[in-house]
Amino acid sequence: MPATGAAWIVRMPSKTFELVDSATGKKSSLPVRSGTIGPDVLDIATLNRDHDVFTFDPGFMATASTESRITYIDGDKGVLLYRGYPIEQLAEKSSFIEVAYLLLNGELPDKKQLAEFTANISRHTMINESLLRMFNGFHFNAHPMAMVSGIVASMSAFYHDSMDINNPRHREIFAHRIIAKLPTISAAAYKHSLGQPFVYPRNDLDYCANLLHMFYAVPCEPYDVDPLAAQALDLLLILHADHEQNASTSTVRLAGSTGANPYAAISAGVSALWGPAHGGANEAVLEMLESIGTADNIPKFLAKVKDKASNVRLMGFGHRVYKNFDPRAKIIREMCHKVLAKMGRGDNPLLELGERLEEIALKDDYFISRKLYPNVDFYSGIIYSALGIPRSMFTVMFAVARTAGWVAHWQEMISDPSYKIGRPRQLYTGPARREYTDIARR
Ligand code: CMC
Image 1 (cartoon, rainbow, N blue to C red):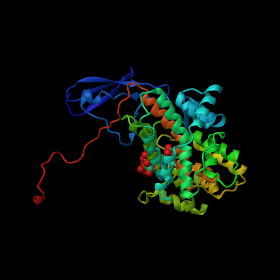
Image 2: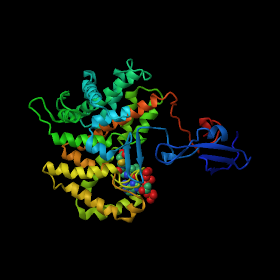
Image 3: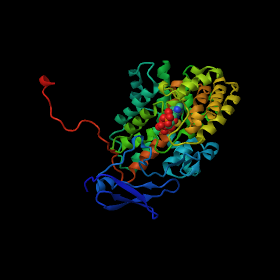
Image 4: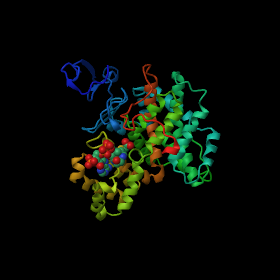
C-alpha cells in the first residue's frame, strides 16, 4: 500500500494496536506481544509491508531489537535477573563459572554438570603459539583493548574451517574456547605492555586465580594468588557477565547475524565495549576522580558537568535503562569497603572522594531530575586498582566477564531457526536525485 500521509495508532483493549490511515481510512492492526515480565512490545514487523512507513528511533530509545530469555532488567525498580535469578543472590552465592553456565544453558548446573563445564573451560585455556607471537606486532604501549580485539578477531583465522555455526557441538566448543582463552589473551596483552615474559595458564587454579596468576607471576620466582583478590575478581565478573541488549551485546548479535565467524563477532563486541559511554567508563571514573583531586573541588567539577558546553560528564553515573540505583553499583560499593578493609587499605582516598561525590550528586537537582544514579562502573575501578590491576586493563576485565553474556546471546540467536540478518533502515535526509556534473563545470 502506498504512503498516504498521516496515520495514527489507537490502543485497543484486546492487546492489539489498531492503525488507521487518515487519508484512506484503511484500518489494520498490529499485535502486542507480552513477555514473562516487563512492558509489552508492539510488533511492527508488518508496518512497512502494509503501510510503507518505517519507525524512527535513533539510539533504540523505544525499540526491542530481539526476543530473549537470558537477562531481565527493570530499570525503574533497579532489578537485574540472569535467567530469572536476582543478581544479589548470584553475587552472594554463585561463582563466575557457574553464572557462565547459567547464562549459556538457561539453568543452574548440578554438581556433575558444573564439574564437567569447569573441566572443559580449563582444558581450553592455552592459546596457539602463533597467536602469542602476534603480540610482538603491537607497540608496547598499545591500549590492551586494541590488542584484545585484534587477537580475538585473529582467532577466527585459527578456528574457521572447524567452525560450522549450524553445528551445535561446534558452537559449544566455541563457547568453551572463547570463555577459557579471554583471560589468557588479556594477561598476554598486559605482559606485552610490561615487556615481561608471557606466563602460561595453570589449569589447577580456578578461573580468577588463574587469571591473576597469568597477570602477576614471573618465571623467576614463585607467586601465590591471594584468595581474597581472586574472590573479589570473581564477584566483579559475575556482576559484569551480562546486561541484556547493551551496545556491545547488540554489536555481537548484529555481526553474528550475518553468519560471520563468531570469534570475529566477539571481537566486534570487544571494540564496542571499549567506548567511555559503555565499558570504558570504569577507566574514565578513576581518571575523573584523580583530576578532581580533593573533596573541595567537587562543586567546581559538578558545575562543569552541568554546563552542557563543557562536554564533561560525571563518569560512572547515569544509565540508559536504570532510572534508579543500578543494583550492581550497590553490591560493588559494599564490596569495595570489605575488600579494601581486608587488604589493609581501608582509608583509600579515591574511595572516600568517590563516596563524597556520589553523596553530593545524589542531592543535586540536576541529577535528581534526570534520574542519574551511580552505575556499575562508578566503584569497580577502585576495586580493580586495589587488586593491582592497571587502569588500562579495567575494560579488559569487563570484556572477560561480558564474553559469557556475548556468547550466550550469540548462541540464542544462531540456534533460533527464524533468525534474520540485522538490517535497520534510515530516514534519508541527503540530496534527492541529481545529475552528475562534469568537473570543468563545477
Ligand atoms: N553526567 C552528566 N549528565 C548526564 C550523565 C552524566 N553521566 N548521563 C546523562 N546525563 C544527562 C544528559 O546530558 C541528558 O541531559 P539533558 O536531558 O539535559 O540533555 C540526560 O542526562 C539524559 O542523558 P542521555 O545521554 O540522553 O542518556 P543516555 O541513555 O543516552 O546515556 C549513558 C546513558 C550511560 C551513556 C550516560 O548516562 C553517560 O554518558 N554516563 C556516563 C558514562 C558511563 O558511566 N557509562 C557506563 C554505563 S554502565 C556500564 C555499561 O553498561 O557499560
